[in-house]
Length: 373
Image 1 (cartoon, helix red, strand yellow):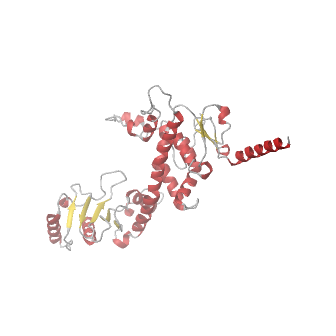
Image 2: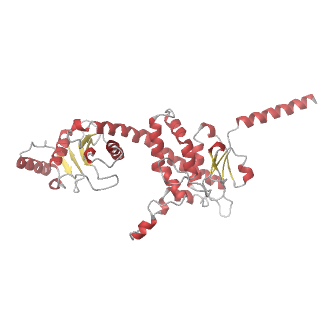
Image 3: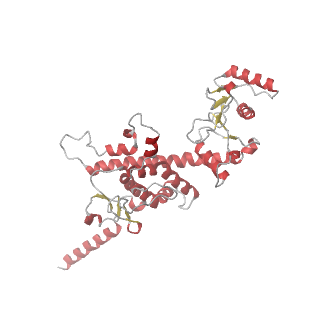
């Protein structure tokens, strides 16, 4: 009898210990799933607390009540009790400095995104780069998931209709969210009539959304963030390159400079309208990292996403190459009484948005001459 009581006591202690050490249970709804809760669950599992958390998919309030954390179901948004639903009529929460209503993905990211980024990058939670990446990932990826789930269009439908703008083809089938919706469909490898493993399909969708997020975070950390430092240094020293401040030189090619340059120009302009005196016209960079690489001189667009250059390379240079371009440059210099541009010009694009020279000095001379014309 004593032995039996000891066994029961040991069993009770084991259960109690397991309850204390078991990973927190995550809950979301069953049935048709969407990109937002698929991503929300993945994001939670990137944190040590939730790394091995089981998932239950249900709409049963009694079962959801047993969950430590619930996303996209339950009719409640309360971070204190780890409830992250956005379907309430009164819900209107947005990410700081954004206007799009959050989905479950945005809610989880808003509360846990900094910690996820800090863990991925091994940076302190309050590091400036964590803040930059936190905003970058929301703006470039998660906000679109929020908008899609809440039925928010990129463009104002009424404005499009009044302008008689119509789509030329249906593009819905190539969006990330549409791919996730398709993952609800029966697995083509499953025998006809056999019940589908709905949770397995959700798990696949969650992994897919997570991999997209992780790749974007990795690229932002390893490429976009270093590029910001590179472009920032070039922008701050631009008047040492040329007194006009219209030319910047990047030490290496392949730097994603455009977004950063526009941001630094905005910062330099202050809170008001863009100060055109702070705008750059030409960006110089080597084509490759090899010694003796050719150099490019690229025009800056009037704004991000535009194909129109602020100051394109001269009309007379466009579409001309090699020796013919050298001759053109030399003839113009003689006529204007200007110093000759070093020989070695390679090309100027027909639209004038970019040109090339065999040397850095030559590319710089092309940019300076273009400023003068």
